Amino acid sequence: MGTALVTGATSGLGLEIAWQLAQARHDLVLVARTPERLRKVAEEVRQFAGVQVETLQADLSERDELERVAERLRDKSKPVGLLVNNAGFGLGQHFVEGDLAREEQALDVMVRAVMVASHAAAGAMVERGRGAILNVSSVAAHNVVGTYAADKAWVLRFTEALAVELAGTGVSATALCPGLVHTGFHAAAGIDETQWKAPLWLDAERVVSDGLAAVRRGQVICTPSLRYRSANAILRLAPRWLVRRMAGDPERSGRGATEVVGAH
Image 1 (cartoon, rainbow, N blue to C red):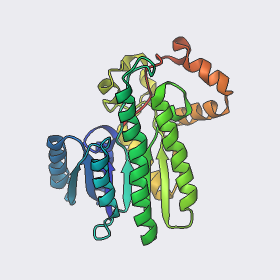
Image 2 (cartoon, helix red, strand yellow):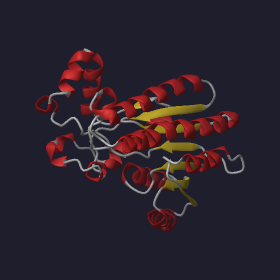
Image 3 (tube, rainbow, N blue to C red):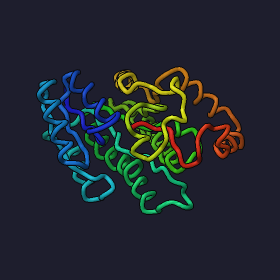
Image 4 (cartoon, rainbow, N blue to C red):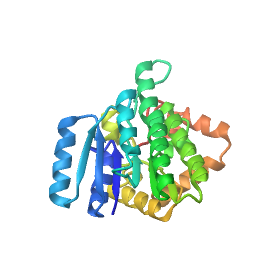
């Protein structure tokens, strides 16, 4: 069924993506920072899914380590048919008062790494005449709450532009824009999950299933669940001054300015 490379593959959406791809009989290249967790996940997937699993330890905020991922994607002897740019994290801080180094790290992981990996993968895939790229964005891409929203807005627009460029090549690009998903993402960023009501939360299995189905269809933007598709439509149509005002009012937005809607 071909090989898929997944970044941020040992937790959250990345782990669910890896398992669903393995169950669909895809061999895997799992990319993550923590070697112990990477080995454990790889062993479990090999044992229970019976597919080949390659591991690549890399901190995508480090340029030399990111280049190793790009080199793997360009390797003609072991072609990758699906790239999943999933790695990311929430910052949980205000920009002005926050740690600039952390902002730069987020930019490296959620923007630069997506660009570099997509460039490597798309070049190899176009040469073969087939392949797909799935970039994990967020419904936050349509909002203006923190720099996480800005990073994810870049991922969404980049994916759309890439899809236009790839038209007719046999290669597709899809942006997955989930809302709130139970993955541990918010807890890792120090964000209180209880501020959002239960109906707003999505199941990771459903989100990933919808995203992979969108890839198979060649769909460019996938927003799982009707409630979030409706919210996105409202945000797209609303005057930008109103979106900014809502984002700056915690009582109206339902969250503080440091907080994000994301998954990973």
